[in-house]
Length: 130
Image (cartoon, rainbow, N blue to C red; front, side, top):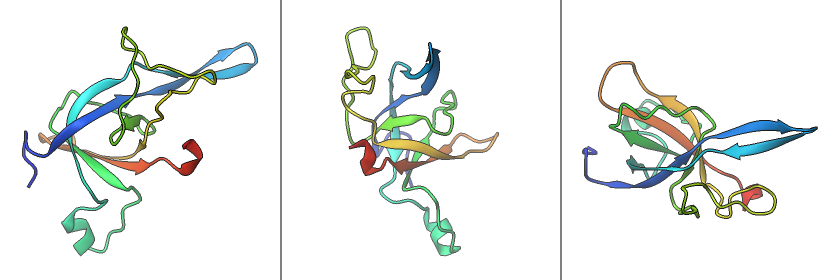
């Protein structure tokens, strides 16, 4: 079983929003926040696999931080480290994309209103993002 301290790794989380500039829609990235989470190596838990449930995500994050409230489509850097400027913002290229692209997106929130643990199903971003 995953513990509060064991098997944790650094995970950067950010949210993307869009703003309108003239006729164009521009992606706006929030400052990435560093968390320490347990990240699974596979998609489903043993209980789900034994029940024949096939999850639609690649891995999941286990969080003991009840103040962490992500939304579906939020982005994560799990196997990569984003380039961050001195003021804490992402360093963007000429196209407005991060120089180090995120490698996962939040696919499904697996949480309850009570309890100390929350799980979040994450999916690997496709090859179209490099």
